Image (cartoon, rainbow, N blue to C red):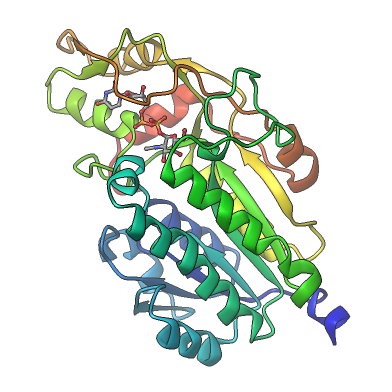
Amino acid sequence: MEDQKNTGEISRVMVTGAAGFIGSHTCDALLQKGKTVTGIDNLSTGSLDNLADALRHDTFSFHQADICETSLIAKLFNDFQPDAVIHLAALVSVPIAEENPDENDRINVLGTKTVAQAASTCATKRIVFASSAAVYGNSEHLPLSEAEPTNPINQYGKAKLESESLLLPYEKSHAMIPTCLRFFNVYGPRQDPDSPYSGVISIFSRACIQGEPVTVFGDGHQTRDFVFVKDIAHAVVASATNPILPGGIYNLCSGTGITLLELLDALASIHHDIPAPLFKEKREGDLRHSLGDPSRAREILGFTATTSFAEGIRKLQTPNQ
Ligand code: UD2
């Protein structure tokens, strides 16, 4: 029975956080592969607009539900009987998690536990979890490989690490393969620039479209490892649906560090005459440099960040893709 659980085709996939930025692209990618998908989202930050394409498919269903509602989640799993679950629902803001540590624990740790337990009572073979580069903290050994010791410096990173630790034993205890994907700085269409959770690229891009100046916190020489959301979605889908891929921990990153000033140059090559940026004090707790090593994900998952930075920035100028 336990052996049977880890073989065979994965055709039914549940996605938590389905109406969010990464979740909605993940649903689209699953549907393009012919999977039957059910999405769950409490719509606190996600939007049904993001699921406009998905909702046109007969093989897609959506439930407005909160991952912390244990009995409802158990019922949804029981009704749908997913072969795989992709757990993306989370409190995604580092500063909000810092200000609300109890909420962070409830959503980002207990929510993971609820989803994993519900999955383990079904014949679910694989669970994919959205972890974060935040688990590494302020390491100076760049680029960061998965072998780098974890040392989260904020509540958000601590909760992501705790979720990884509670998921990894499921492979032995329930024959359900857990894959923890440590996302670096994900960007792309549908990342809401109005949200305080939003990434610098969507904020800067929108300001340039509107002809407004951007605000750079610090000197602009800080670097980030930006990775395009559709590349991320493909890796998430492969991790959930390829029955022979081993689980474990993987960085999802490009392996290239880009400074904010380089980001501004890329935007200036598309939007002419953008106003000069405003410079403000660096943000409290800001990392100076963040850079991941994608080798493990490339070798084992076949992941490549195929969208170049210039191409990704260009694609962002066309909304709602
Ligand atoms: C990213 C993730 C976060 C967590 C963290 C782990 C995003 C949105 N956030 O935080 O969830 O995984 O990595 O390390 O991907 N900045 C400006 N002006 C602005 C907005 C931002 O200068 O208007 C700067 C900001 O101070 C920082 C850089 O841009 O130096 C990137 O900021 P971010 O909020 O996009 O992402 P980050 O790396 O802080």
